[in-house]
Every structure is written in C-alpha cells, then in structure tokens.
Image 1 (cartoon, rainbow, N blue to C red):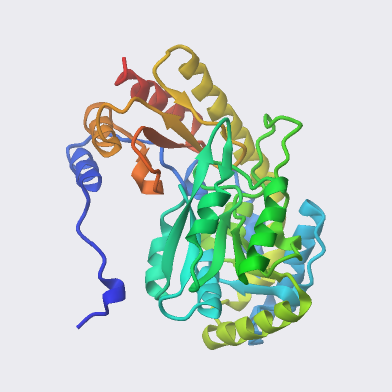
Image 2 (tube, one colour):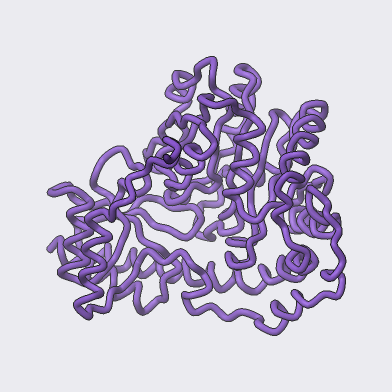
Amino acid sequence: MFSTRTNWKLAHNRLTQALEQARASGKQILDLTASNPTRVGLEYDDGTILSALASPSSLDYDPQAKGLLEARASVAAYYRAEHAASIDPDRIILTASTSEGYSYVFRLLCNAGDEILVPKPSYPLFEFLADLQDVRLIPYPLLYDHGWQIDFHSLDRAVTPRTRAVVLVHPNNPTGSYVKSGEVSQLNQFCRDHNLALIVDEVFLDYRLTQVPTNDDSFGTFAGNRDALTFTLSGLSKISALPQMKVAWTVVTGPEATVVEATARLEVIADTYLSMNAPIQWAMPTLLEQRKTIQSQLLDRVTKNLHELDRQLAAQKICSRLDVEGGWYAVLRIPVTQSDEDRVIHLVEEKSVLVHPSHFYDFPSDGYLILSLITPEKDFAEGVTRTLQIFV
C-alpha cells in the first residue's frame, strides 16, 4: 500500500529504548544534546516578537511565490549588514524551513535516481530528504588533521554522469568547521568542470568562535558566490534562535543566465506550494533584528561551555576534543573499547546523561561523542563530569 521511499525503519533504536526506560523509572536525565534554543534559558524580547506578528497588512492576501518583497529585502539587508554581501531580493526564495529549501533545490536539479554529493560527517537530515525526493546521496569525506578539510581526491572519485550537485555545510554540523577560502576556488572549478551546482547550508554561519586563530582563512558567506551556480540556505531557526517561526530562504547566485533560469523554475515550484504565511513575512524585519541580542547570548554560552569542557579535559589524559571553529557542538574523542552506541546507552543507564554517538552524524568509525554547547552551563558542567567519570 505504501511507497518504497517511505520504507524507513520506524522501530525505536536501542538508545531511544534505554532513554525511555530511564525516564519511566524516574531518572532526571542531563541532556547534552540540546538543539532547541527556546528551551535553554535564553532571554527573548517577548513583547517585540509577539507584537511583530500583529501587522494589519497580514489581513491582505498577496501570494508572491518567492515571498513578499519586503520580507526578501530584509534578508538582503541582513547579508549586507553582517556579511558585506550584496544580494538581489529577486534572487531570494522564502520557504518555511531549510528542509523545504533543500526539497525545492533537489527537485529543481534532479530526476529520480540522480545523485547529490554530501559531506560525512554531517547532520543526518539529508537521508530523509533524499528519500522523499527520489535522490541518491553519495558521501564524500571530511578529513581531520589539526582541523577539518575536504577530501578533494575522494570528491573527484565520487562523481558519476548522474551527479547533479555538491552539498556543503558551512560551518559543518557537528564538526564546527568552516570551508576554507583556499577550498572555494577548487570547489567552483570542480563544479564548472562537471556541470554541477553547489548547495550550501549556512544556518550556523554567524556563530564563529572568537578563539579561532587570527590567521584562519575560513570563507565568508556563499551567498555572494558568482563562480558556480550556488544555492545558499539559511533561516531564522539559528540566526535569531527562532525555530518555531518557520522562516528560511534560498539565495541563488552564479553565472547570470543560469541564475535567471534557476530562479524562474524555483518560483514555479514555490508557487505550487505557497507555504509562507503573511504574518510571519511581515514580521521578518523585526525577527531578524532579534539576532543582535540573541546571538551574543548563544556565543557567550558556547564559549563558556567550551572553556569548561577544556578545563575538565585538562585534568585527565584519556579523552580530548577536536578543533571547533563555530556552531553549537563539540566533538569529544574517546577510547574505542566498545561501540559508541553502547557507550552512550551506558551513560544514560549509569550516569543519567544523554549525548549523541558518532554514528548519528555518520562518522566513519567509533571513538567520538557529540556534545551540545548551548546546554545550560550548570547542566553542561555536571554532564561532562559524569561523562568523563566512565573513562577513569
């Protein structure tokens, strides 16, 4: 009765079962996987946010497929103010989420069975999006050696006649690594040589950590990239820590003739769904302004938790962390004496702490745990203490 594209394994995995049993027994779990910024103790300007949704203009139905011009202009203003990038609002398509943005771009570029190159490790969302769009994902590795870099040799070997695009996550989730300036020219040339597009997820772009060395050559936003057809995705979920407002966008840049055709086709796709609602679009200038107070809180939280993690790691010699340049996560390197899944289940059952195992993010091997750096500071410190205790 059901399509094969939804033939997912729906049974709860062992970690979920262990977590449910622990909570059912009354244990209070310290959650070091927090990803919802609205539930980690941040101070929001409630009155301003809520009043922005009450514009009288919302009572008028103006179905602009790419989104209201005023809302798109506010996105362009954000890029101009924060990233010195000049973006034409007519090259911006608003969506309810970056996931929807991905689905539009996948549909634009791919026939059923075509291929998209995706980085590993990275966030596991791509598999579900690809299944729903009948697209095949082909992984290419990120290599770690005193920092992360793209394995261009493997990237080149992954290309087939059915390859349509390369996905970048900038900075990557969970590695926190930015694409380097020296890699961008290689990526653009690679795409030109193989007639491919770049799809760049920049939701964590603004969360660059200040302790990154001054000689760091991390690239800025791809929203200004003109050397290859580029789809840059971002949204309010991370920029203003407002995931519940369901606002995202795709910026289309590259060679002008190709951009014109891509934008026209995306507009038809967007017009078919018209997912954006009027109140949220009229509120966008105000909601984007919220970044100016919320990002500083998050960066302060991330920085303090990273310092606390380093302090505790310095007191032992068994575990270490990988370099991180930005984003909300840290990767902890641990001894491989059992699978990471078994290790995380043991943490839940014996220490009442939840962290993510490496396979959740498609790491190539065991030996890594992923911790959220936006966890409230007291919980984070205690959770790290309990985590490191199992390695004594």
